[in-house]
Length: 117
Image (cartoon, rainbow, N blue to C red; front, top):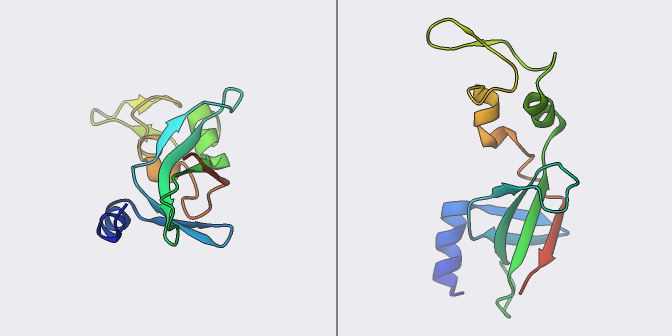
């Protein structure tokens, strides 16, 4: 990947630091349940800022406890109303907190980065 491409990805997707190394994301993070025993993690491909071998990496984030509680419903889930004033039941797709995936993880603290190529 050229330096120009790295800069464009950095501006579009951002960077994260893990293990003292800075990674430039090359895609929007996506959720998957792979390897989580029924849970959800978020993943994004990345390149290292100082990697001259053009290795590719996968950055991994765990979801936050608050996000998990919202997804499960229950007492912690905030009461909301739709446009008609009807109460939105916990764990429905219309929960604004649940719909906003910026709430899903602590995006500045990935839990793992693995080399994939």
